[in-house]
Image (spheres, rainbow, N blue to C red):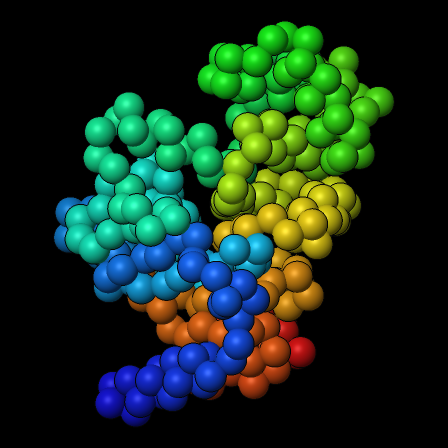
Amino acid sequence: MILEQEAVAAADAAAASVQRKGADQPPVLVYEHVRKVYGDFVALNDVSLQVNKGEVMCLIGPSGSGKSTLLRCTNALEKLDGGKVSLDGVALPEAESEVRKVRQRMGMVFQSFELFPHKSALDNVAMGPITVLGMTQEAARARAMALLEKVGLATKAANFPANLSGGQQQRVAIARALAMEPEVMLFDEPTSALDPETVGEVLNVMKKLAQEGMTMIVVTHEMSFARRVANWVVVFENGAILEQGPPTQIFDNPQVARTRDFLSHLGWEG
């Protein structure tokens, strides 16, 4: 146990020596000693992190290690049992009316697409700006069409979800989140429910967003995406941070033995 703690401390020291993207500006998100429990199960235990502006942070680790829970705590879908999360230096509020305002600043894409089945792709994307932002239908639909074009689905604007592939539905979901003009995009394993042949089209949209400078937190099992696109990678296990650092460290020279074991079990060879 002592050796493992020393390894984690060494990994933290190595990560701290790296100049991160956006480090010259105040962080967008800060997690301080975050704790979340469900009965006797500790989902998150003393998690401290920061996300810089324009940074793509990928959260990786075994299933059930706390990655998705942290994402849900980020926009207050889950209430903390300890610690705090701050957005632009302000702790997340507790009043539901204020929480809704914060959520408008964070777009979230889930594993399931959660599109309205009785609305077209265009109307699914336009709905938020109309109902939440108060945009006119004409302006919202124009924004929605531009975003569908951005994700490569302009020709599918009139299609209902049942007539779209899983990858197409997930791209509509991304466009819907972008329609609210968020400051941060949260992705909770966005490709886990997709057929292998449609994974790439979703990851390509996410890569494009990263190249445009969108601040992103991505829970993913797609190691190649994390290696190529992330600026910072955080490895979770048992609700705690095992190791964090740039992708070159995590994938090519992990400092903690458990990180090496996790990656080797996924067949990762660098």
